[in-house]
Length: 279
Image 1 (cartoon, one colour):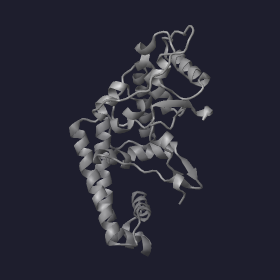
Image 2 (cartoon, one colour; image 1 turned 45 degrees about the vertical axis):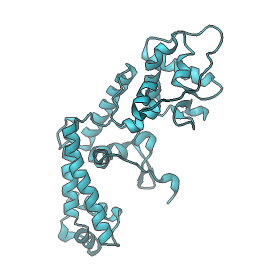
Image 3 (tube, rainbow, N blue to C red; image 1 turned 120 degrees about the vertical axis):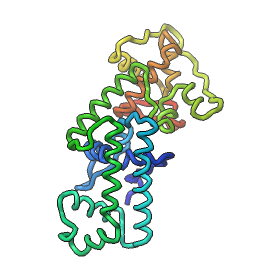
Image 4 (cartoon, rainbow, N blue to C red; image 1 turned 90 degrees about the vertical axis):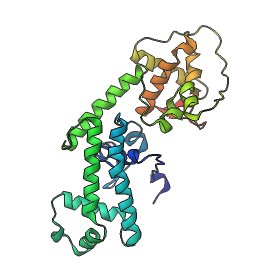
C-alpha cells in the first residue's frame, strides 16, 4: 500500500468518528473522491475539508457517540478474536446483505466471515448510527443517496455564504481553528499567548478592500499571486487600505478558498497561504 494513499484521523471524540463512519459521509466521499481502478480513493481536500458536519447539540452528539463507540469496540473485538477477518472482508459481506443477499445464500468463505464477524450486529450498529447522524442534520433516516448529496451540497453552499459574512461554525475546532481561526480564536483554543511574526506593511498607496464577496475573493487571490511568498490573513489585511479592520472578512475568504481547493497551506503550521497554482 502506498503511504500517500493512507489517510489517518486523530479524533478526540467518538461522535466525530460516528459522523465519518456514517452513510452521510460515505455518500459524500464516494461522490467526491477519486478512484484507483474500481477502488474508491479518499482525497482529504475534497472528501474531508469541505464536508459540512452537522451543527449537533450535546444530546445529538451523545446519540451519535453511543453507537459509534459500540461499532468501534465490536470491530476491534472480532478482528482480535479471529485473525482471518479484515475490515474489508467484513464490509464486503455487509454490503451483500444490504443488497439483499440472505445469510444462507452467502458463499462458504463469506458465511464464515458473517458468523465470526457477527456481521448482523455490525449492521445493527451502523443502522443506529445512520439514524442518529441523520437526526443531527434534521433529516429523515430513509433518504436516498442522491437526496443526501443534494442536501449536503446545499448545506455546504449555505456555510460558504455564512463564512463569507464572517460567521464561522467551529464544528471541528481542533482542525479548523489552527488553519482558519483569527488570532483570538487560536488564543482561545490553546489557552496561551500566540506569537506572531510582525509583517511590514507595503509602502505606497493601498487598494481598498471591496465590498462584494466576489470582488473580495478576486482581490485576495490577486494579492496572493503578486506576493513573493506565502501570506497570512494578517499579512493580507494590512495590504489593503482598511488594514486589520477587515481581518474577519479576509479570514472568511481564505476559509472559502481552502474549502474549494484554491489555496494550500505553507509549511508554517497552517498560518500562511499560497495559491495552489503557485506551489
